[in-house]
Each structure stands twice: as C-alpha cells, then as structure tokens.
Image (cartoon, rainbow, N blue to C red; front, side, top):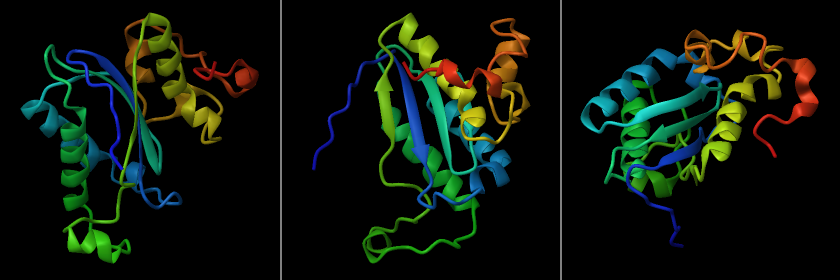
Length: 175
C-alpha cells in the first residue's frame, strides 16, 4: 500500500510517533538519548521545533521545515534508527523486520498532519502540551518534565496555570 503524504517545503507538520510496545516507558527512561539524537539530526538536517512532548510510549511534535524542504520522513527515520542503536535489543523482532535489518522498537508508521493555519497550529500546540494531563500522568501540564510547555511559559506565550486537570472538559486541541 502506498501512503500519500502532503509534502510542502517550509511547511509546519504535527506528528505522532509511537513505540511498538504500547506499555513501554522507554522514551522517558531514555529521554536524554532521544534528546541527543534529535540534536544530532537537526545539526545535519535542520528543522524548527515548535512544540514537543515525550510520553512514556509515544511522542507528539510540531516541526517547521526549511523552505524548499519537505523530507520529514527521512528525519524521523534517522531519529528512530539512531535512537534504536543506543538502546539494547530487548524487544521481540518479527521475521519480516529481521530480514530487513529492522528493530521492533517503533511502530512502522507515524501520523503526520499538515498545519493549515494559525488556528490549526494553536489547537495542535495545545493538544501537545495537554497530553500528559489527558493521559493522567500529571494534574497540571506544567508538571510534565518532558514538554516544550516550559519554553512556552519562559517566553510568556502561556502561563503556568494553563492546562489543569480541572479543565478536562475544554478539549485542548480536540475540536
């Protein structure tokens, strides 16, 4: 099956990338390895990180790619591959993946969404920052360590009281 992706150079994209093991906590356990790998990939293949949250078994991000560049798949491939090489092989690997020299750490595909406008961007940034509250890891978005919300607060884009569990009916980013 061939997947169609909206490839527009210089655009902003929202991503959801999952580990194959939905019960794993590997991404937060090895968050420093993930950060290092992202830094290395960005040095070779630049992109701007607008928002990011790392959850135990998945992550959400919004990237803006450079003008004329739409190759987010290559960047994710490098991030996933380089991260996988830093992690001991403990997962089961299917015969199909083994024959291709692949690990079984990540789900085969990721979700991407082309950001359409400022409203769409704000909804997805809110979704990212609220995700740890939504999943019950914290009662306030600011309490999740692995989130770009801290940068947004530092820059004055939001306040520390934004995104509390008491706001559960608000539906951050899910309109």
